[in-house]
Picture 1: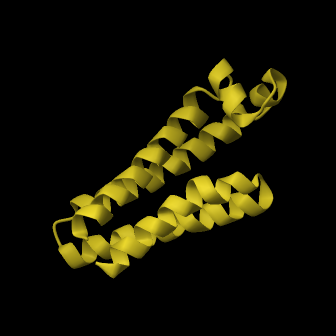
Picture 2: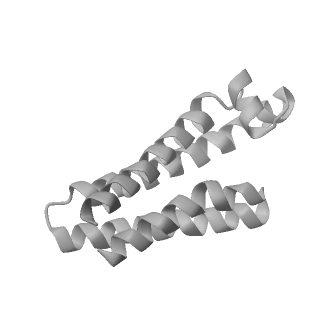
Picture 3: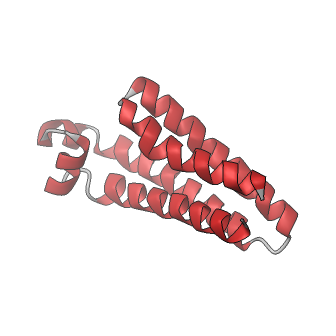
Length: 120
């Protein structure tokens, strides 16, 4: 169970590192425009906000990695659980306010990782 939770937490962290990359560096590029369904004009107008959002996703990824690497096992699990809960809240909020798929793409993996982490 420990190995599975580690893999799932790492996948959520990698997902958020990828979100950072998309929002900070590809937001106004063709790939970013396609992924987020933006026009060049809307992307240009919201570039700073997207970069800020990307930075927050990077913090979530960093927190999850911190929890995985923390030398105290119990505290590490608590750190992971906290950041997974943060990801879930962000996924729920995004799903309710922006696009329903955010709930599944962001919140779903975090919920699964948290359930396995707490079951272990």
